[in-house]
Length: 190
Image (cartoon, rainbow, N blue to C red; front, side, top):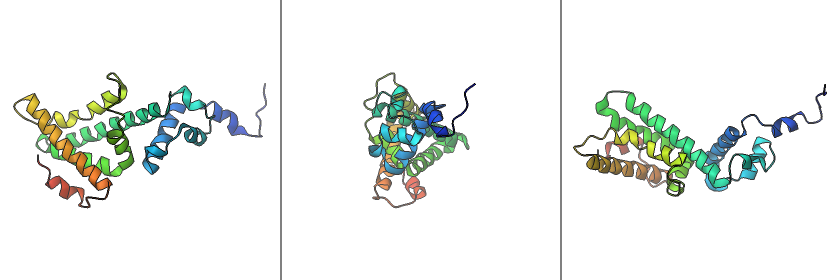
C-alpha cells in the first residue's frame, strides 16, 4: 500500500482533475464576464484550474472551441431565461416579458452577451454544431409568441423586435443609452 505524500498533496489531484472540461468552461465564463473574451487564454485557464498547460487541449482543440463551448452554454441559459419569462404569466403579456428578460440578461452579462452576439462565433459555426443549434433555439421563444397571419410575417416581426432589443443592450453596454430598461421596453415597437 502506498503512503500518501505530504509534500504537495494537491499536485497529483490537480493533474487528475475530476471534471476538467466543466471546470475550464466555468473558469472561462468567469474570465470573460470580468474582462471580456479577448483576455482569455488556455494557458491562463490551465493555471487557474491547477493543471498542466497541455491539459485543456484534451477537451478543446483551441481557444475558439473553448469560446464556442462557453457561448453554447450561455445561449442555453439565455433560452431558459426567455422561456421562464414567457411562462411567468398570461400568454397575452409573454412577448413583453420575454423582452424584459432579454434586456436583463444582456445587461447582467455584457461580456458574455458580446461573446454570443458580437464575436462572429455563431456566424462561423458549422451547420450541425451545438453552438448554432443553441443560438437558433434562443430565438424560438420570441418567434413562437409573435402572432401574425403568415410565418414569414411573424419572422419579420420577431426579427424587428430582436433588432431593437439587441440595439438597446449594445447601446447600454457602450454607455450610449442610460435609460432604465423599463423605459426602453415602453418604447419597443411591438
